[in-house]
Amino acid sequence: MSEPRDKPPRFTVPAWMRKYTPFLGRILEQFARVNLLDCATRLAAQAFLGAIPAIFVIGALAPDWMRKQLVSTISGTLGLTGPALDQVRSVVHNSGEDTATIASTGAVGVVVTLLSATACSRALQRTCERAWHLPKAGARLAAWRWVAWLLVWLTALLFQGPIQQAFGAGRALGAVVSLISGILLWWWTQHLLLGGRVRWLPLLPGAVLVAVGQSAFSWGSTFYMPRALNHSLQQFGSLGLVFVILSWLIMFFVVVTMGVALGYVLAHEHLLAQRLGTADDPKEPAATAAPQ
Image 1 (cartoon, helix red, strand yellow):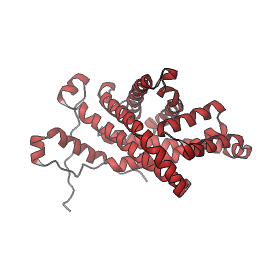
Image 2: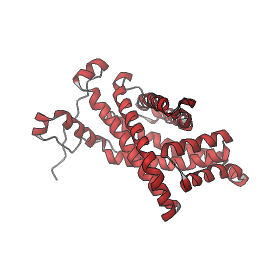
Image 3: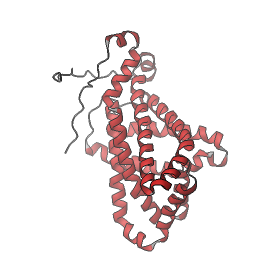
Image 4: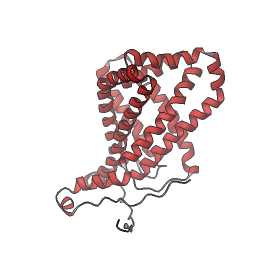
């Protein structure tokens, strides 16, 4: 079933807000249009469903150095220690040692991984289109972009460990390198998934906001996630890990969706719009829904 067309937001800014806090009013209208929690939850579910087969495929088929990079990225991003880290290591490394797992994974596992992971890129594309008030792109325009986005991001994620250490220069410089790489990745992501329908410069505020929010969120996760994951693993077993990681993904994509949506608002602010060359927003039909 095809996805329904976006409807005009139901949220209407009160008159007093339009007068005294117009910027806040535009932000709230934008969040209502994007449907913040719905988009974040959908992205989290698709990312989780795509990550599980990807981990098994990499563990079964990838060389040893790639499996080590994968463990380094997961442990560095979530701050894993103790039983939770041991669980991830056992899944990744044992998959590569089990010949039966390798045989059963094969081409079928790769295909399933691509289908699951590109579902996340499709959901992210729709989030960007909602944020920028654009119609859904046709499959012929977007299909190769989903695969390109997936391959670039898998490569970037595999090397997050070395990037966070600035390839041996230390965590302080690594934080700067990670932030710059995040800005570039999210800048390119928006331009790619929007099919080039928005010029580069207007997309920059959203890329900066997402990268800064992502960095702050990842930093905070290193304090909370190790204790939460180990506690859930001891109390509920593997299901506890699933619940905590899925909750983490939802909050992560709330940050991503907020950054993209706010980037649109900032890019259309008068001063920034002049400097970025932001095109005028197309006129939208007035809401005609009957009162409920």
